[in-house]
Picture 1 (tube, rainbow, N blue to C red):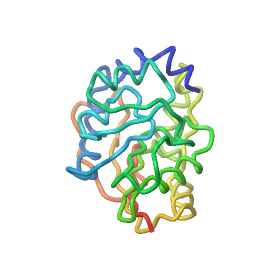
Picture 2 (cartoon, helix red, strand yellow):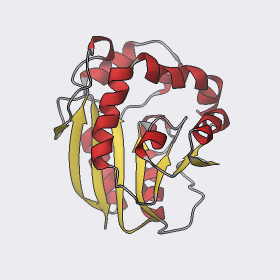
Picture 3 (cartoon, one colour):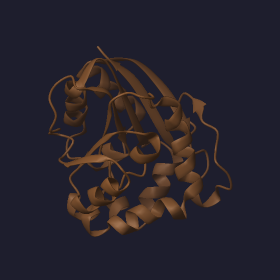
Picture 4 (cartoon, helix red, strand yellow):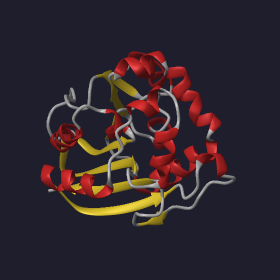
Length: 206
């Protein structure tokens, strides 16, 4: 999977500029949820499009080309997969996983690894394109390496994985109520899920 991102890293990064309302709507939601002045990591940091503006200090990703850009944006990076995070137990106050679960081999193992590296008061913040949403249907019909490889996750499935890994107190938020091509402004996030294509789940480490 990392080879796809290594080969298409410039295309990946430019997508956020071409779809700025989508990108900034996602950012607006995440900014409400990412703790300030806390030690955090983004698992699947990519080019740092989220970590840099959100102030996430550390990031891992298997794509070397993506990490070069993330590093230029000020993120402290390590090349690694989410299934094997190269940090000790209990070192982070929060972990963010944004879109990444659609592109990993074992999403449950990634969530377990996030639990391991979080301290006892740690939070996990996971952003997904809801597999049951109109947005996932839209992406499935599009051509391109990223869309072909994506395995979107249902919100209820994610909740089961989180609880099985030892997380509790799940809270849901959503945004992207229109297709990227139809958006004319940054959208206001809402609580819950079922309407927005992009859903963020926040949970505490038990």
